[in-house]
Length: 202
Image 1: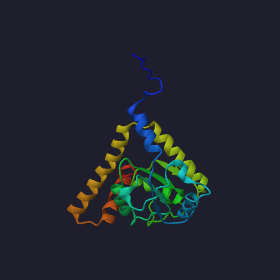
Image 2: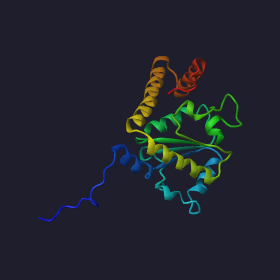
Image 3: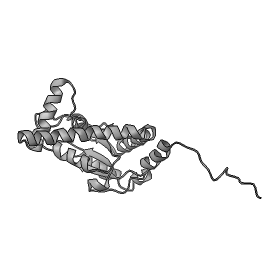
Image 4: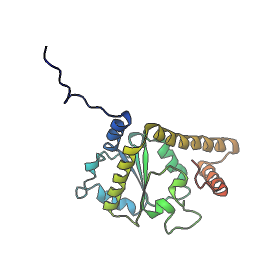
């Protein structure tokens, strides 16, 4: 009987490692563009910068076919419930990159109408600085997200997303009990979080 040689046929690894390897190399981005950062994103997706190198060329404009949300530009308070709904509809596991200072902190728009950072209403994994950031900066942000995906545990990502779903349940309860619109419910939750020092509603 011939000797069985498994040197080239068997690889030992961890379940987290092999799944995260597949996840980080097959991101399906959904751009939520509202301002000039979206123009820089268009450049990043062109052949010059070749975002396809990261397995992210399958650009989708349907949240149910995407797992990477790129928020590109200013988000107003009235847009906050729309952004939350889009994130809720995305395929799991899902990640968010906040592109530019407007999405990350409200930027120069320190007004009552502008959301002072999208991380108050949706989980954010990577922040990309700049006004607007260059395509190279966005690519660096995607690389940092890949590093984060590689290092995270499967259960940690699940718990992270579940915390957001719990906040969606609270939002729907407010709408039903007090007769609020989605915008009014989210605004009420943001104000309450600010009063308690939490700064975020999820």
